View 1 (cartoon, rainbow, N blue to C red):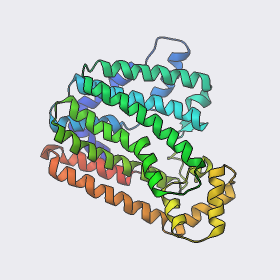
View 2 (view 1 turned 45 degrees about the horizontal axis):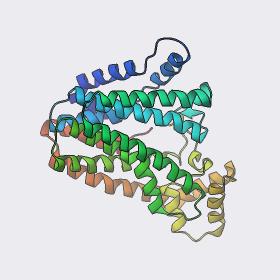
View 3 (view 1 turned 180 degrees about the horizontal axis):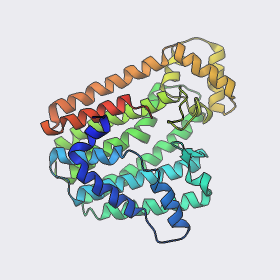
Length: 324
């Protein structure tokens, strides 16, 4: 049995319900809005975030309508943020498929993103749980702050591992953190249990983003972005940050500055990618993933119900080993 099958096994019925409700939330009569929402629904995805909400809820109780509405609110908020991010980043693809702004235009993408965001608010309101509503609202603020921090960091000439962690904490880790928290809140878990779930989700999210950043140093059609795409967008991620901060090579540091200035070309990016690989950048990033994984494993060993351990272990292994 593969990782995803193991993850889904104890929540397969609840996940089917989630997918049905999610598709219903992104359905709208006829016309342009209907077309764009259909385009977004077709992207599907593996549902890693809602699966974590459902698993977290099941670990502390039973999945309920409150859980489903919390999961829907979070996934819709995430979907809206991706539509808006593609406009900000001027991206033409999202995981190998045309982005909404590329298929239509920026105006349509912004408005559809707003529509999905409003739908997220509607769904989370249906949870009738003030704590869940408050958490999702705070999540939206954090995601926006993370995007702004990333934009600022592009122009920041200091190449800092600490700032990198601040960015991915606000852009990615907080989403997985919220999955664990919302699942636990939805079934009435104690504050102590919610805090432990939060730390687990945070560690999962950090691993997820570091793995995603490692992808940028290898070419794969499955991943849906060319090698060095982050550098093209002015972003320096953990592997190259480590290599730069542990090597005195003025010419390479000049290339890094060109990344931040947006003046680097494809040949120069190829040099930076190769430099990162030969100076321990990938190995260091994988080492950091292992550190977060050890903390996540501790939670599974100590806090997860026996009947759910296989699913949680598969979730952790999938995030570490995933290929796209």
